[in-house]
Image (cartoon, rainbow, N blue to C red; front, side):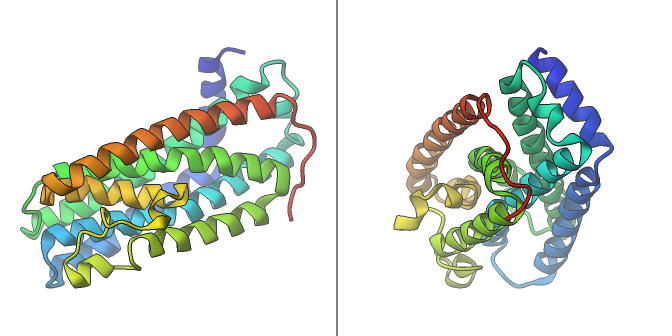
Length: 259
């Protein structure tokens, strides 16, 4: 099986999965709810976009854990993981699953950022234009890629509940890494670039990179260097975790369906 064929198989499988509808619903609901709030709230519009990016990024450890856990549960129910394990090209199969789930997440984030931005633009509260939101989306996606590889491995080995628990802990770490929910919005600080030991834990990277994508348009002199450093680290970790997942899955046997 070639990688393009494996990706096509994942696309066809996910097209019939409730995960697709769930991603669309979450992206739309998040954009509408937060967009409606920030259209009328008296916060600084630029800081509103920063806070929204942090919020979405901080949720990604939990959301990726839930998605990976449910996706592997579907695979087990459909045939005991035969779709992934009963083929010679196991590495390509798990790589395709990683790409497919990460693409679903990126699509949901794109919808959430697009709806949010459109609502703020219609209300005249998007002073920096759409570029900060586009950069925040790209940063959040990049920071999330390692989480999907980690989530798949934990789901296969330890089960759905374990990976969701790890994801929930990761979301708490992400919120604390930026000083808490809406800390920058209330204080006016650029908390995405604020130094913190938690900022270099990979669970924090979707929130940090998403926030820095907006903050680089607010204060390029201060945010550019942390953005580049974290983006390079995120890209390196994405390649490393994906490679380790592929190598490990080639010899994977069993695992737990739940824990």
